[in-house]
Length: 198
Image (cartoon, rainbow, N blue to C red):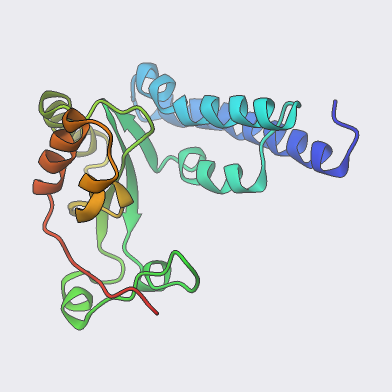
């Protein structure tokens, strides 16, 4: 066990995660969701614990990692095929937050995206298969999954906010295959451009 405060906090975070995971297993079972989906959705947990172990030389999870696992633990994040889907009640205060990660919305965007509307926020994971076949299969699986297990939600559609579909990525990506797959993913979404604060 790590002897530093950081080590103790990281271990405590991991233990907290494991306790919540036990409850999450019960939630999946009560809702009739196959355990295979839970296992697939644990990829991020495995990735973050392995990374912490590699970088820090100890078992645990950082506060930053716990933040990213919060929606998973609260039954709002699911890996379905090659994409991750987050049940996302739209909140302008979350999108337009302060700092480097802020995204000021235009009036048109504010009219289009209403606070409280439910969207499926798509996350593209490291190493995800972004081939057209994989993306199509994942989107189809998501439609079936959420209409079956979350019928009570009035889901307005899919959204994503990722640097991967930034139009200038073609200058940065090493592979034409990766680029062509990202272009296909990009075409699935209506772009809502924004001004970056100076």
